[in-house]
Length: 283
Image (cartoon, rainbow, N blue to C red):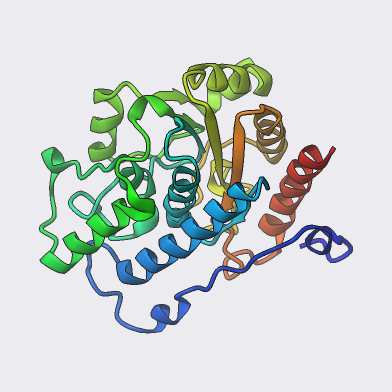
């Protein structure tokens, strides 16, 4: 972190109450670890994002793992229930598993499925218990509606680490995707323009930036680094270019893990991107 910066003093901040005490207890269901706590976080975050938007402010969400993004999306839809929301997901992972398909039980692999209301029963490999199913259904209904988006409202950028169960859904629904190679070949400007054009039918757009979208040589301070990602400069330019669009109403950064960020490199690179985004929003 840049200790010389006054960024967090210049802008109002709200800290969402966590459920981090759950890290020291049983994870609960093996198919949706600590789901009860995540349901609570979704509700708190959804309400805070909704209130921020209703007050005509632009929420920037700084999150831990990417599971929170479902709560953010719920908050946008809670504030604007009649508007069509597009999602630009800058991430190495599709995050479209459910408790029925997850190979790990990590809910940070499920936020897109949650907002789509997607169980993917067709590719079911797990048999979650009744409590897990009830909590999963509650998660999907955060903000008072499900689904919150449709497949055509979704764009992935730099997606490259996908399980077969997720691939099935992406191909079936012809989800729009831009690979890392396309970003490098065509440039950030064209990718941003094409992503926004694909969501031209939406009246609002949310941009979610997972730091593991960046190459594993950069994103060492995150839980699931993946090779062949975008550079920190490409990531920053992409985020800044996207939020210039008047439809973009919310921006989120997720997955910086201080316990893995030995040289503080991940935090510093991500903070640079955050500063660029904030600067763009305030000019």
